Amino acid sequence: MRGALNYIEIANKIFFIPGEKDGRYPFSNSLFIDDDIKVLIDTGMGHKLAAELAKEKKIDLVLISHGHEDHTACNYLFKDAKICCHKLDAPAVRSVAKLKELYGSPPGTELEKSLDSYLRDFFGLKDSRVDLEFENSHVFDLGSIKLNVIHTPGHSAGHCCFSVPSEHLVFLADIDLSTFGPWYGCMDSDVDRFITSIGNIKALDFEVAIPSHKPITYGRETINKKLDVYLNKIFEREKKLTDFLNKERTVPEIVLQAFIYQEFPEPKGIYEHFEKIMIEKHLERLVRKNLVTRTNSGFKLL
Ligand SMILES: [Zn+2]
Image (tube, rainbow, N blue to C red; front, side):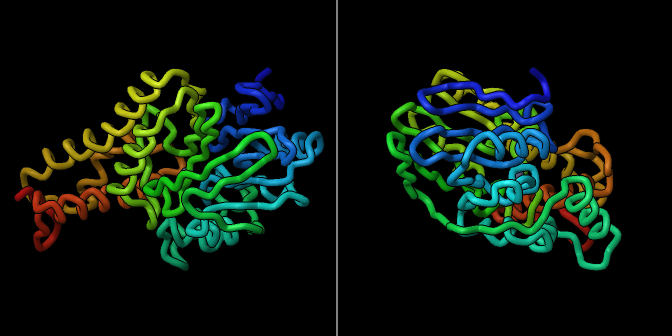
């Protein structure tokens, strides 16, 4: 039922919990593992669903894939659980102010104010505890199930996927297989690392992939095909950008083209800002590869 808490068993003791709006942003999907140690991955399913879940299940561990608001918003409801995330994303989970900083909004600006009210009022985001900081290859032994941490930076510095090798299953988090493609609009996002992370996931042997904002994908071939399409979005964007740089262009001119968003959703100011950060990351990458050069007022193809 739409909007109701739903536990969908996808493997022994492993349940998919679709977020509100089928996990589309501003919500996200979760995974619940009902082993000796009870685990919830991410808390962005929506306040109502998360409150219900917190009441029904005694969660021991909350694992956070990364520090973005749509994955952490309901941490506060799991008072008795240990909250765990990668050490590089722990500061953003702990502090809304730190997350805002990572979104690159200069203090005291209109943008900062609107981002602040977006996070605190719209999301109800609060500072959170982090009780355990993990790193790549950390293994959570839950009783009969072993859950592995796969550090997959790019979307954020501490972004992680979680795998259950015995079930050939991976929680992909925001390697989300969306048609939008990879998102790297934070100061700690990194296009090159994102590309490497997608490659690393592809190299592993998974039959079940659970993205944070899309339905579950089954079958190794289908998963790999979707990962390729998703990865290619980066190169498609870069192609549009390099074509446009056939003459000198300023950054505001490039941002107006909306090569990444196509159309800016509301609140427009915030999404234009993300477009700018993502475009700047492409420009840095192209300059590093000696394909594009910096000019007095902008950038141009070499
Ligand atoms: Zn995210």
